[in-house]
Image (cartoon, rainbow, N blue to C red; front, side):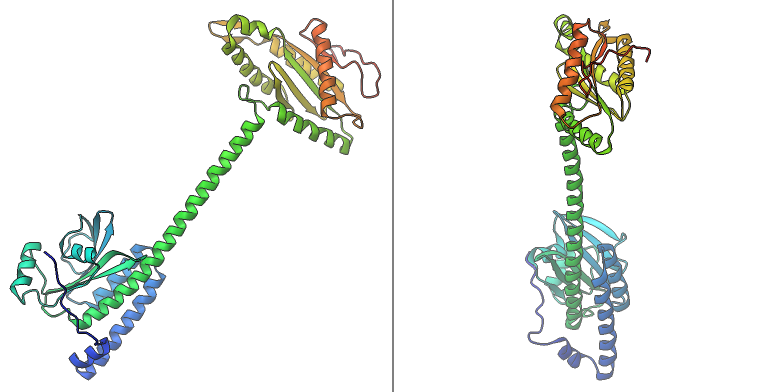
Length: 397
């Protein structure tokens, strides 16, 4: 049944109503008291940062100003509305959820128009309305909708056990409260939306940073071994050359090849070959220094950059790596295999005529010397930086 609101006197202000209905002395005192309370409430509501704070401010106001009446908020949440007791004792719980948008408050929420019934026993219409909707009913009732972001999102319900307690003057005061409530809710919701948007932006930034870091790692890493890739190797080699030139330092470079790796693929399959490469990457990281830069150059070839390392130090590191690799048992279920390494070494101390490709070429030449000399060994490039012949350093150095 459609509910028609009791008409409010047209064209009459709150002050005119007070002049008509309240004796002058009482009118002045009551008006001053209520306006002070409204002014205090508006300031508090404007400062509220959460809906819970807003509820507390409203509860204090209505306990003081509504006396024996009761005040409730109805706030839409999806297809339900939440009933919040602000003052009075008719509702056992402070909050309860009601399915659908029904009842008198539901009608106001749907229509967006106030409902005022000064005397619920004034006629058969009002008595029938309350008999159908409530176990017990008030003497007078006022429900005023409030909005946020141009939408009706709830209503303020005031009830009193006394007929005509909620008159036109109370309607005006209720409307002032509802107006401030709308403004405060809009501010709170805006702040919450901004906070939520900022949180989402922060979360998106973090996820984007993580994705960028992952992409950077993918761009610089070899998927199979987890080592750096050739692209990243060449960048690092340029950096090592620049640093060595600036500070007059020496560094060394290995080119490494797994001996007879093709036989592993041919005999056990490419998945077994990939497993050998993965285990090789782990073994290299365990056997070399943290400051050494290890990369998969391609296929079964690897490159290692050893900062601040001369020829003798590089050779000792190469022999240590070769020995550990030779003694390692590669588990390729259902078998285990042993493999060896050939290592080419170049140690660089004069860089005027050297660039990254030249250093790689020198180390690669040394690797092929190791291969041609029988594999499973570490060899230097034939020439040092000054062009003099260099001999293979004995393993006891």
